[in-house]
Length: 300
Ligand code: HSE
Image 1 (tube, helix red, strand yellow):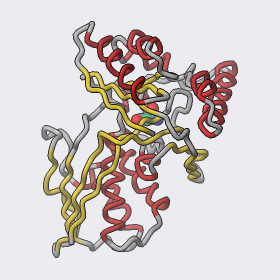
Image 2 (cartoon, helix red, strand yellow):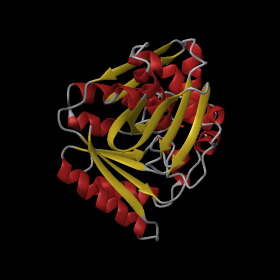
Image 3 (cartoon, helix red, strand yellow):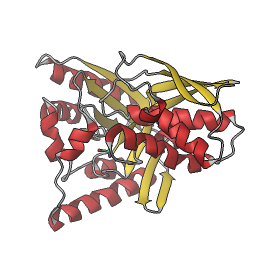
């Protein structure tokens, strides 16, 4: 028995919602092929597209650990499984690469076994993959990669994940400059304390963004795509961040910020044409200092 599954990249945080907001894009994404085997245990037989950088040992690999934790939970740790992982997005990109692999893996094994668990219940296993990859079991990438659309993590303990409506037409531009930022490092530099003043501003934007998406109200979305807590600290990890963001806003984006822990940046636009233009302008800003990049446009 064999199954092939695709899981999409995701934009986590979405400006104001550090660790609590995320949405899925159409591409890029990872693919996984799982094949049952007579030999018990989970093995990674091949990883294509990572230049040999990801751990081949199942217990140290984000997809491998997610599958192992899942199998243990459903009492099938004896199952023999061979994994082939097709990495189709850059590592350390802020596009939710580790999350996509973990989600693809756990979704694939659940389907292969005839869906013993409902999809929402797969989330904690995919989160284990995140823990291995970057030291924190955050759900703002695995949530939307698994469920699609825009996802809110209302609470981690107990886990409470909600999928919310977005406008019928809303487009995301993702620009990935060809540099790497390690999520662990990008979390390490964050301050542990937040001022009451900034908490109030951030809460206002969190509430405004959700109301804007659900109404829908593009102007409200635009006013709410602001992050006064995380972005100012992490922006220093991305050369030309301010210039690329300004280029996005000058070209009609509703807002622009860091995708996940960076270095990728995302912008939201009302239509596909604007989203394409925004991407080209952001790429140009990076290119001005010799940084090449890839741009992706998806409908949300
Ligand atoms: N919310 C996480 C962070 C996402 O910003 O560290 C990492 O992709």
